[in-house]
Length: 147
Image 1 (cartoon, rainbow, N blue to C red):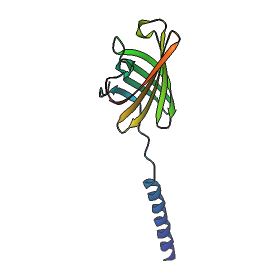
Image 2: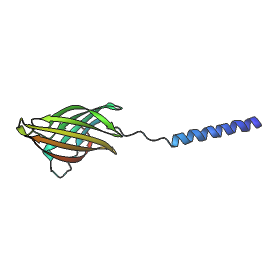
Image 3: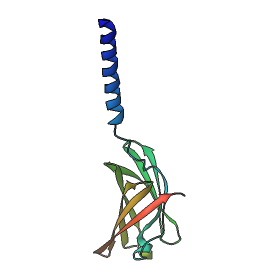
Image 4: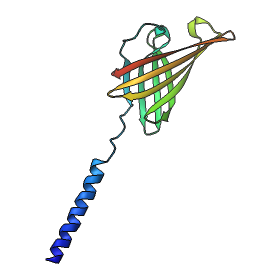
């Protein structure tokens, strides 16, 4: 009888510990890898300077961004860059030369993404340099899964 009570007590404690860890486990972070596309729902400002689709590949902290923009001819391929993880999101920088048909114009586009439910929040910060002067703009888009 004392052995049965001891075994029952150990079983109750083990079940409580297992239940505690099962209920207090943090869910995994949403994955940002995959093919993403712009929803097209925005105010139209800066559309020629923005991203239309993004392919994020890799795993863990080794990710790459392959970006496509709205420049002419559309879509134009921005190329592939390594991405740096920052929490659940990631960012990459693209150097795009010869913008607007001028050999003196260059552009740096910093792309930051973070999960937003089943979608992806995308921030693009553009810096244009032309003949010694520069200008910049920033856009925010919500991308959805897709090609």
